[in-house]
Image (cartoon, rainbow, N blue to C red):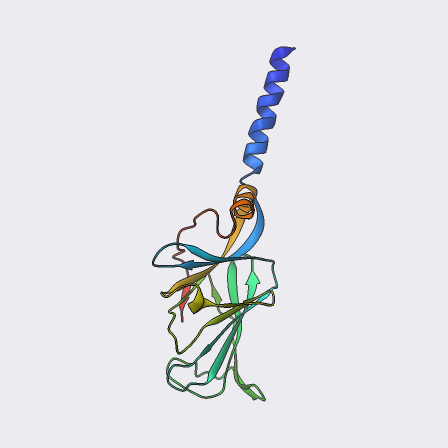
Length: 176
């Protein structure tokens, strides 16, 4: 009888331990690529929109890039800009609207790397929350979508942003 109870208890503890590592939440994570420090964590779900807004360094006109969360990827929906400048797309998949030039995209990225400088003044908007990236880091940052386990969620909740470290992803990246 005692062996059965001990066996059940051990099985229960093992199952609880394994369950702690099963992904339960998808999170947008912004990491300072020089220090590895996570500077922003925001819970997201499939279909959520993320915007990266900045000023073109030469043209001094606004640019907005819109991405949709798709699993652990960032699917680029569109880029909106007011004037042509170095590094901006020139494609047949472009329309002109009151917003300016709109390039519709179907590109998907594992990660975005953003080189921060005062002129572009990059702003990241996630779930209506705006983050001025230069206020949080003075070097390049990586924006990734990660699935977090129960233990990671508990660690972040109990310690504040940003609990458990993650490596910089090296998959399909876009450099901005």
